[in-house]
Image (cartoon, rainbow, N blue to C red; front, side, top):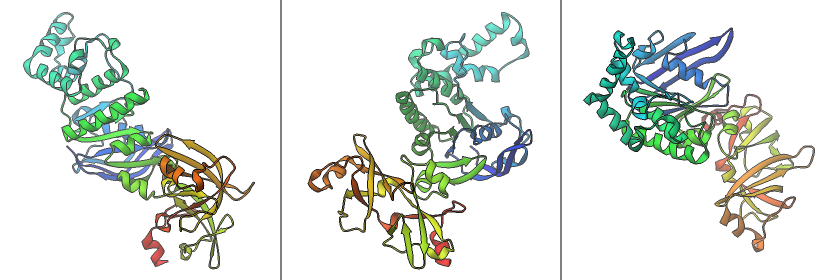
Length: 394
């Protein structure tokens, strides 16, 4: 059960750098998620951990030991691929037990007939059969052990692939977008099953996905990647509450964090013609910044109503009733300089707080407000977050 350390890990393909100076330390027993858009280097990083792809430079260490040149079979890992990769001619029992059969592989297993008898004998051996039954019970596959993969649903096939990796009792589990081929209902079910599996086995997991919902609900730590560069490393709460830059702010959250341009002139901060009612961090030396506010922190009121908080006029452009909550889209300013922002509020709050319980419609004017304590500030030039210590010293 290793602690994984990435020390300036880099990967080049044909002169193109796809992983750039990757640094991170992942403690034992964590559920680490590599999150990012397609082509950002997530799967390449996972394959380097597995030893399936060489590291161009830097060091990868398990518990302090460099494993750059260690063969995959010696790393004590299990790999669950995006495709199920099940053997169609084998039963579920044989698919699950295949890694243990291969661990006991002998040269004479290649001999026709003799090898077949030997492999069947291994499958019936007490220790191997017991581990197969245990893995099948853990993933609710006991009733399907004698079926072939073609007789299983997509979710059941994925569970067989997970059981096959579980049976070897590895120190580290690697999962490469294992849920991408499943429908929405099965993805939700499998998310819960994989999280429960992590809790039971108490081993380290490294999970690759581009789905932020999977990352936020399953991971104990997340590495956000973009173009081969680590954008942020932290817990789901840290990444959601304080995105390190505008890329993470836009990538995490549905709807994503609102980033509103703000300009400074003397002692005044202007947001599309509206003077901010609180003091921005003007001392950082930039004449323009971006105000970041999560959609659920934005309050929407009828025009002229702000419930005692300073408000800013805006125009409703969309109202999406999602049942438990409502997503409201609105814009500041006028064309061609209008800027769109979103708010997410509970359905009951949305209806109750309007004057006369009147529902806001498209093109209506409204007032929005937010608590200055919920605002984050980002550099317009670099996109980086200004933290409180940096503001205090500026």
